[in-house]
Image 1 (tube, one colour):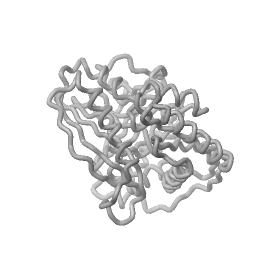
Image 2 (spheres, one colour; image 1 turned 60 degrees about the horizontal axis):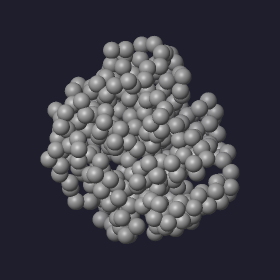
Image 3 (cartoon, helix red, strand yellow; image 1 turned 60 degrees about the vertical axis):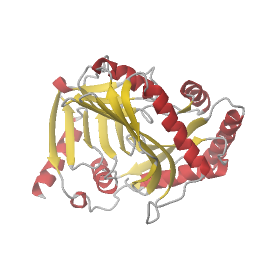
Length: 356
């Protein structure tokens, strides 16, 4: 326990230093890793042959940030029981400053517009999202990170900061890509319902169809860069207090030089964008009326210890000096009901607030 205390005290010192850093734990692992950049300079990804920790935005026209391996210091700790990490109750005082009635009206109108667009055969699925702003006092981001470690053990949990960009934190259940020795892994993840004591649940046709769109898109996308593709049957997974449908996809990368092409082809996935991707992306940019920034982008290790582990940036929030921005979305198909889609974003938002 003393070692864990000293580890987090060291992170607190890094936070106060204002240097760029990330602290994270990959899904179902016990290793918590800290990467600290030696200067405040901002580096961007030029080639997927680089090594370091990547933080990429939703919009591929915007720069992806990297903490280069040769410009950083890394240390880590193995924590066997994450219940030992956080026994502290929520410490922040919060107040929602978004106008939720107005946001509800706008989100329902956008959802209805999206459904009509899909019914015209213009797309099969589009993911729309919203931003909710919360004013806070007495927030300790490291304590919130500890709660994420405890509550989301099968997610990619992270706290990321750069003085030129700001502070982000999240707990994502979705892997974008894993590469080791040219062996490839990804997942098709979609659909959401509340976890109530069991993962043995029934999924409606709308959710099953939504998840199948994601699976089909990934398979079509990777066929030129991945050999020996294998696909699991869809199954239910638990992520915190939510359930999703997941399909595992594996194979072999035809060449290391194809990594950048593969990532660019997969991102953004149908789980955060839609199908067809370009039509969905254009619709999102033209109709959401806010800037997603790094929400639904991706983050993780690029060519670190001969592995690449990238995750979609879901269940995330942006922490500013006095406010927190929650980013919440959901997949829309022709079978969606606007009021239910709004309620789903409210439910997801309430779950995210439990770690503040």
